[in-house]
Image (spheres, one colour):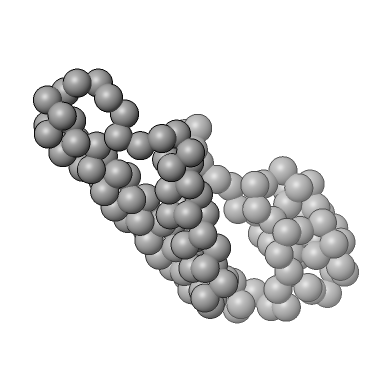
Length: 123
């Protein structure tokens, strides 16, 4: 599957190649040393912390993406509906409703700014 993502979890020097080959590497501090931790994206102290890492943080990430998708859908529907109503009222004359600078400002203000504020307020 082209969109698949590979999580590699290891706790020793023998797992370093696997951690580096995976998209996301998690190193566990263990008796075998710190080689896996030094070559990973995330480090945890014990195997039991994997549950929180995968379930809790995975859920937070899913909720962030879902909120982002809903917001983008709402923003674009609002923009398209205004232009559609204008085209009906203008009898499809082909005239522009917005200057290009207004559209760019709308996309900047309603795309970047709320996402930054949501990221600041996020857990």
